[in-house]
Image 1 (cartoon, rainbow, N blue to C red):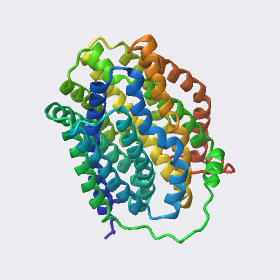
Image 2: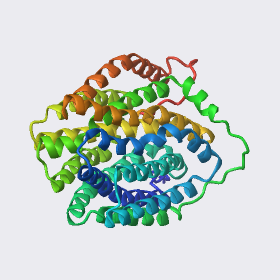
Image 3: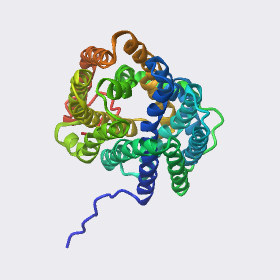
Image 4: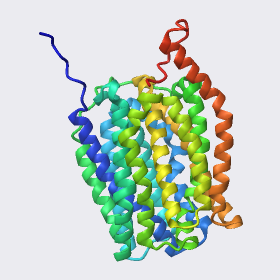
Length: 417
């Protein structure tokens, strides 16, 4: 008789974190639909609307390095549930202010900054704990499930519910988001803690040095920075493009955001198999090329149906990017450096989002509501052409390591196809 070993399975701790993310993302989706709808009731100026989006992402530029060092020193699980609890308080306060009619652009921007600061800590910490609770061979699958949970909650269920609740009463979607944050915090508090030795000094510059020496991750971080800048240039005016140019109502706007989730959920469920067949880096190149076409298509959309289709395709390729790159960092970066390396990566990759939001508002003001998406698509195309040589070089290195034709080359454990 032969002994058979069961295939590795996702742990209970992983599924608790998955449910926590899924629940809080439903509230986040409602919040994402309600905030721009609330903003356009205050002002129709795209420059002012863009200020709220810029405030949400500004902490990635200002606080990500400090957050990464904190995560490498402290228990990431504790940081996760505490950040969710603080977010519950912030959104709950917004709900109360909406009830009493004391909400302006400044209040929304301040709340967005606070939520963004908590999200910096939560996002990096949640990626840091995944290798502790998931077998390495299951990272693509685990990250795919996480992306599907984000898509279902933040894009599929949350936005239509948020749009519907906002139509009933402006405070309802914010109250719902506060409740989901609170439930998530309780679930996260039950996760196993990582044992860490107390270290007095963990220099942030160590993460910068490590990333600077890793050609593939360095290239992807820079490319992500350009892409997120361009993405926000377009996305910041989506609510105005939908409601003013295409005449979509508030409930329809929530359904429009949900269309992106169709592609994201599909991607989260099948992308791991796609990566196994063609390899991670080829899949990444396809996603980047398709995304260029999609942004131009969004800018030229003649109606809501075409726009919804473009958003669905965009959801798929963004999910593909996220699964490949997050899994790459989790496989490659040493555990003791993960927080700092990821924080540098995120600062480079997301730090330009506030500038992208402000740029999108200015471009829309000067050239019209379709222009930001068209300009963003063109800039993304140029960035991809410039990045292709470095990505192809990384693909050749990976092939040599896999086939053993270059045994003397250093092995940064770049990707597992």
